Image (cartoon, rainbow, N blue to C red):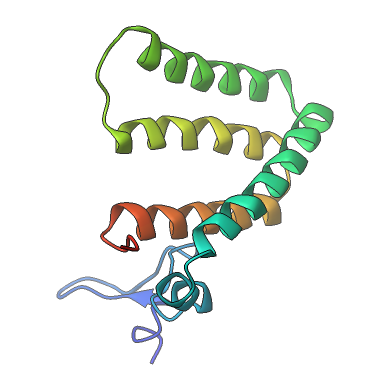
Length: 135
């Protein structure tokens, strides 16, 4: 039952382990929205913008010097990828952008906010990059 719901993972000849808790489940109501409602991606981006704004505010207030170093490094990697006239794939750009936003969110020191944003990002990546694109 737990394996069927994606809560634990089992492998032949190995112990069972708890699955990644922030993995997007195919049964998620949001997955259903993506397949039935054309505006869902835009709505998701609106919600992310709101949450990322709060994440940045909290990071500015609660972040440590170490957090700011990580944020700066992520930003510099993203900037370098675009400034060197280097062709990068859309997926690589999305990963660099995600790392930057994740660093900011982690600096907020709010685990619920981090989990929520990560879940929304996973959902968006799965919908856009894993063939769930709307036509």
